Image (cartoon, rainbow, N blue to C red):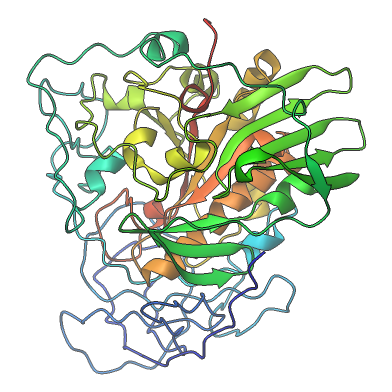
Length: 510
């Protein structure tokens, strides 16, 4: 495991914060007075426990007001796209340390969820440069049916596009995204099986323990593709640049191994590694990765020998590829053929009974082939194939990765739906995505958002009993804003949930 990168000395870049117009921003912009976290261009400084001042040019220079600690005041979810300077990203106290700088956290905005140590020491929300997307702020994002033809960027409240792939800016040197066909789009599939009808039928997943391996104790060091550059390593997380994009990777073994009786590793052919977690009840969780660390199979083996394959993608499973390329790059733009409220479930308005039916809905377009979990995590275009739940009823305080105890029960409806689904099919996989607002640096926000996703996953397991192996987490920082604003915005500090089973494993007819 990579050693955590040493903390960079905070670079005090203090910008007095202009008091924004009455912005019901979650964190009233306190004057960024705390010594900012040093943000290195390449080896980025990890979100340090010192708040960083937003280096945004103040639209209207104001005299430096007396530095006031940022307070996670109550936030109205009314987006105010103001380019005004953001409040200094607040620093999170170390999970094991007493409340650090009281000035940075005048009040403990959120109680930690049960067993969420990794997500407690939150970094700062950083002033990101996520430019307003080309979405017209038309429409309130309610549920108008997707218009015919080129309906690629369906605006939601505040003007952000509906589809995450529509929020991404072209990267220099990349081929333009293929335009959608002029032919009428095919109707959305009516079942998981129908969505996979055109996918090549490969060999079924082998039994996870069938291949003999060479056993060893310590987890091996993964290799890196040729187009991967390591930017920073923080605890069990690594920020990398791959395929012209910056992403965060994390080691979730701690979450999966919690309470285990034994853990061991075996070398298999082609550079693959098999991890076996043995639990006190006799259940074995087996994960096989290729030489790059991509998960190519995960199975749960019950004490009676019954095996549930949670995901399996054999494409290039020997690690023969030399570089990672976004599998959605050559796909045409997604043409959403259903109303917005059938594509996104808004937790603030949904009935408790709506979650089960919504999570069981199939992808909105055909699945060309089975994808690895890493491919789904890294490709907005592939993730857009499946619907999402926006947990807007549960949001995070500015700069925080923890949630208050009284918010945990707001997960009960989605947790109950997951439990029902897993009773029917124990091999389902759910992706939990973490997001931040645009205040702060890109890399610090990646770290913060990844911890937010982990916080929710741990709460679903510790409080509601969802098996950790059925949950995959990923942080996206400020890349996919819900409200197009550079100012602090509570609606952008959120998590979303998708059922990605039909993207990562063969499914039978339902």
